[in-house]
Image 1 (tube, rainbow, N blue to C red):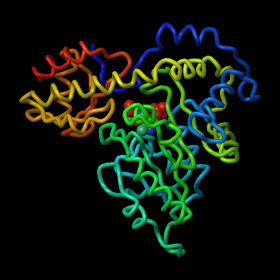
Image 2: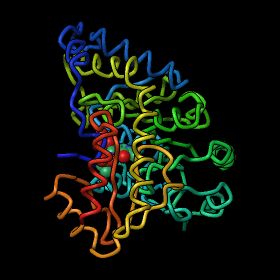
Image 3: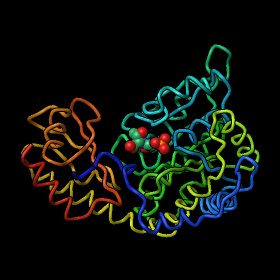
Length: 336
Ligand code: TLP
């Protein structure tokens, strides 16, 4: 089975398992896990923030950011298809109790569009408090948020007393694709979440980074939500290993995604634009079948993917997918 459903599907490599087995651990709720402390320091440094907190999931990192930045009833501006809105089980409404407003279409948006969406500071309106960006943008097919626009958005947001949160679940993909450091990409944002369990190939774990005070509040919310973990160093060791060994190789995933997209563009039964593929995610349209039927047929022939609507399918390349599997996938998809 060639599994292109997500880059979350990777299994830890032998080297990563060795690192996990030998991790030095302590009780992290007491702040005594040396490997967790080491990872948090390293992540804060890499992301250019004062402090960082290890959390079980990207979803928890995003939810802690909403809880720390916002009060109940505040408005959060997001791009279309934002992960917090679409894929976090309504958590933003349940925990931080915020209201989301979508800016622009297609996931990325301009500073001008964001400014136009900010509500007047008058009591009829929700108080716009946060602008949440996603880089890379998952739903739109792993697109990279142009950094000049991120900078314009952040300075306009700050001028209007809004904070900026960056969902960088795949920030290392954006960094490798653009040649910019994650520190540069995260620098306009007040807080950033980043995942070790996506392209970096760790089995579990994400990080939230921001100011010291912000992270102290996030730690308290993490405990409230049941995310205070004990000998978590075994997981943090996997994340540290991923930072050492799995960042540069993301370029291979990007090449494989491009190869898949170029192959798909030559098939008569699908529509795919290889120019739109910027990182490890691609979205394409079957022309003769609806997306769920196409995916069911592909699965029966040995390629797994996710339909993301009645008409569109997502395929994601990752650590466990080789170039020859891409070619094999293409010959299978030609038969769907
Ligand atoms: N995304 C998953 C699914 O939830 C859709 C995937 O397979 O891509 N931010 C972004 C941009 C994400 O893509 C994801 C995971 C998360 C946050 C949440 O991460 P986890 O799954 O660790 O909660």
